[in-house]
Image 1 (cartoon, rainbow, N blue to C red):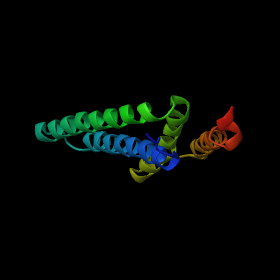
Image 2: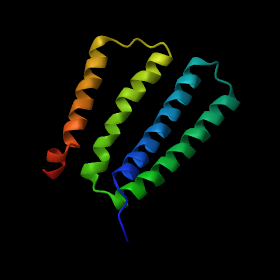
Image 3: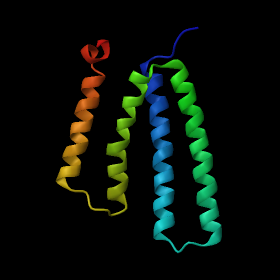
Image 4: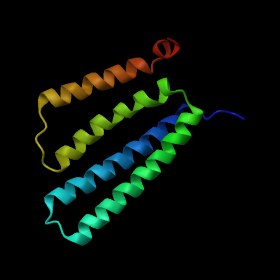
Length: 118
């Protein structure tokens, strides 16, 4: 059986990140709105269902890729959540942007050809 390639790995990790972002946005919406029982119930069910899906995607990912390749890619969450934060009007400062830049630089170094070989 042929192992899936790097584009598949990136797609799997990005799908888990997208799920995390949706759950974060749902929780932010819940915090911003007047919480009715129906809305709280919807967010709770949606969050549990989405995290169950994320669990299944991670299970598949870890079966087909080494943890040392897959897990560091989750750092892509940080620039994405910074964008979601800005969308909601949360303050985003220069230090947060610089921090995300450093994370992305580290991620690039870890996934470079020389870094991937050890």
